[in-house]
Image 1 (spheres, rainbow, N blue to C red):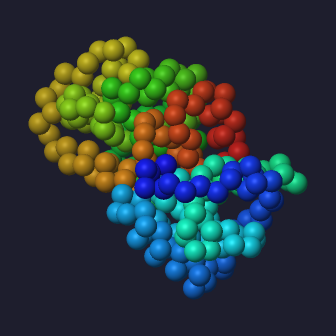
Image 2 (cartoon, rainbow, N blue to C red; image 1 turned 30 degrees about the vertical axis):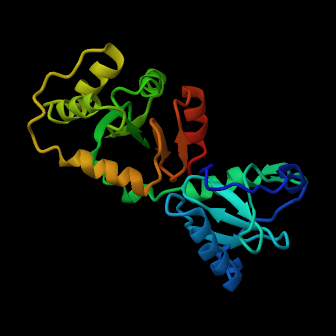
Amino acid sequence: MKPQIRRVLPLLAMAMLAMLPLTRANADATTDKIKDTLKSRLGPDVDVRDVLKTPIPGIYEVDTADQIVYSDAKGDYVLTGDLMDLKNHVNITDARASELNKIDFAKLPLNDAVKMVKGNGERKIAVFSDPNCPYCHKLEEELKSVDNVTVYTFLFPILSPDSTVKSKSIWCSSDRAKAWTSWMLGHQAPSAPGTCDTTVLSHNLELGRTLRITGTPTVFLADGRRLPGAVTADRLEKEMSSVH
C-alpha cells in the first residue's frame, strides 16, 4: 500500500461481513465524491481509477490500479486486506481483482510476440516475459511438458539494460522462437545484432502498462484471465481446460 494511506479500519470487523457482487449500477454521486476526495488526499502517486458502492452500508470499493482497497463514505479511512463472503466461502477481493484484470485476448497485437506452436497449437496463451527473469526461466521449464498450445511471448524487458539487449537480439534473430528457447532453456545467449527495427519492445512496454502488468512472467489465457508468476504445468493445464 502506498505510504500516503495512513488510517486503516479494523480488518477483522470488515472480514466478518458478507458481500454481494458489485456492479457499475452501484455508482452514484457519493462514489464520485469519494473518488475526488481520495485522489486529493492520497496524492498523485496513487491512481484512484474507480469507486463502487457495496451492499454494506457506508463501505465502498476503491480500485487504485495497484490493488483493491475499501473506504468509508467520506474518504476519511481506508482499509486494506481481503474481504470474505463467509456464507458462500468466497474471497470477494480476489474475485474482483480477477474481474478487473481480465483482458480481451483477441485485441492483443500477436504480431508483436514471439510465436511458438507446440503440437496442434489449438490452445492459446500469451506470456509477458523478461529474458533475465529467473521466474520466467522457471515458467519455460514448466511449458516444456505442456502440449497442443500456441505460446505468444511478448518480450518485456523491465529488469535491466541487459534485458533490453537480449530482447533486441532475440527479436532480430532469423528464428525468434529458437533464439528465445535456446536462451531460456539452454542458456545460449542470443547472438544476432539487435540492429533491426525493435520498436516493438517499446510497444510491448506500453501495452504492459495499460494492462497493469507489474511483474514477469504474466500469463494470459485465451478467455482473458491473468495468471501471474511462474505457474506450474499442472496449474496451467487446469486453467486452460476451463477456457470456453
